[in-house]
Structures are given as C-alpha cells and as structure tokens.
Image 1: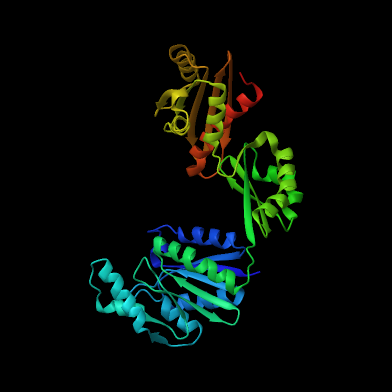
Image 2: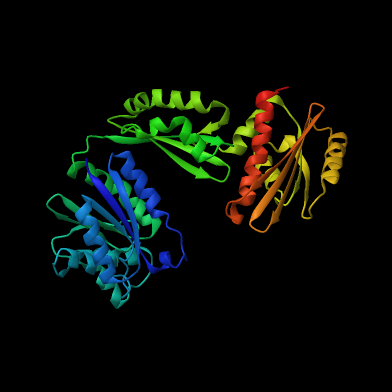
Length: 387
C-alpha cells in the first residue's frame, strides 16, 4: 500500500491571502485509489525550505505531491528544489518550450523571456503535458519513491490529477483499484466526550476506522473502510454503522451530505408545519437557512436589539395569531464577556417551553452554536411530538 504526503507551495498561502483548496481535491483522488495520506504541509516560496520539506517528506512517504511554484518568475522555485532533493541539475527541454509557445499562441498571448524557465526540469524527470496551462508539470522517480510537482492553479492541478496522476499512481504502485470509502454520521446536542463514552470501543478498530470531529453544538462520527470495491467497503462498514445508529439514535440528524437545515426543513415539510421565527442576536440566520429549503413554510422577524423575555413571548403569541403559524420559535443570543447565553423558546400545539443555555467556547462560534441548538429544538420537538 502506497503512502503519500502533499506539499502546497506559496507564500500567499502562509499569509492567508488565498485558501488552499488543492489539498482537498488531491486527498480525495488519493482516497479513491486507495493511497493512504499521512501528512499535509505548506511552505513558502523559498528554495531551501521547499527542498528540506521535500527531503523529509520523501523519507516518510512513497509519493510526495506538490502544488505551486512552477511559474516563470524568480519566486517559483519548485523545479530547483526537486533538483536539489535528488542532487541533479536542471536540464532544458526544447520540446517543452515548443509546447509553451503553442499554448501562448492558442491564448493569443506573447511569452516573455522568463517563460523559458518553465522548459527546464530536473535531469531524468518525467515531463507531464499540461493541456490547460503554460506550466509543464513533472514526476521524478527514484526507486520506489516519487515526487510529482503540479501547478498551483486549481483548474490545471485538477486536470492533471484526473488525466495523468490517478492512472500513473495506479500503475506504478500496482494499486488494484483499492478504494478508501468514508461515511459520516452527523449528531447534535451531544458533546464529543459524551459521544466517545458511548462508542469509544469502535474507535479502536483498524478497518473500518472510526473517528470523531467536533463542531459548535455538533459532533460528526466518521467511519472509513478500505477495500477492493465500494460494495465490499459498504459491507465492512454496515455492522459498525448499525451499532452507531443504535447507540446514538436520538442525537443523529443526518448522514453524509445532509445538513441540519435540510433535515429540519424536510421534517417540517413532511408534517406541513408552518413555522414563524423570532430572532435576536443571530442576524436572522435561522430563518435564512430554513427558508432556503422551505420558503413557503417559514416566516418571522429579526431584531438587532436584545429582547426581554416578556417581549419575546408576547411577540411569539402575536406572530402565531397574525401569521396563522403552527409553530413559533424564539431565539435570543446575548454576550457577557467570554460567556454567551441563548434563550430558546418554542410555541407548538398550545404548549410554550423555554430554556436557557450557556456557551463558553470561542466567541466567534457562539452564533453557530446558538443557531444549531435552536434548529435542533425544532427537530427534537417534532421527533417527540409530531402532529
């Protein structure tokens, strides 16, 4: 089984000027062909740092895939870094220069002198034709080790991953179509440590593996199986998924791509529950998220000022009467230093319930937590008391 690492190259990444989307795409391609990804690294446009990062990575992994640093300017040092890793010179390839000239002509542009740098590759490197850009990519093999250097432009990187790298790795490492299949179960209103208490024994499995990922008010349970086919992987995961569903049932709102607002909106639509939402401190996010899925059933008002308990309750009853709503949700989020408080109230089928909850996590996550908690109140109410 091949092991890989990804290195993204570019000072702009370290400065936060652009977001790295390349690693996610590459990781999914590697996952789909059964290559284990052990590490992601980001390094600036410095030839010595890139060289050192690559040397360390190639000692640990069979395959190192880099993106970026293949342009024509002085601060595009990836070619030189790979040459330094293997202690070889850069060699000019006239056929690559012809390809670059052809690309510029196709785009009705004129190359500059420095574009010729892109026609140099480390000696003995395998050139990879880039049909959608001007920067040639390349692979360098030494024994069972491989460094593959791809452009940083996402469109070019994706094209080369799909049209060269995928099949190249399958053939070079005799991968036999093994895949890594993930499955995610989404839970809410149950903390990561509490989830761990319930399914901790599953987290010791080796194949499939089980891991937890915490979000504000939510915890994802990820199950991953490695097998020769999707059917085999699904069969391996089935008993594990069944156990998780049994132990966490009331806290599960969806699986894989299902979002909380989709799950809540679907249930409201199934029961045809017209819902009004009164929000204070959450900037109308609950109404916006649910309204994207079931606009015909969602109404309400947003207030930027803090409402008193009495005012919110009065508005909720008024909203139910005027808008002829079946359900009214009231939410008020306030901050007191590092602690945030959410008041959740629900008026449904003649019953009024309210509760206070406190959030002591990062202040920036308080609104996400409050919105998720409030939507889960709707979910649990409909789960326990459908129409």
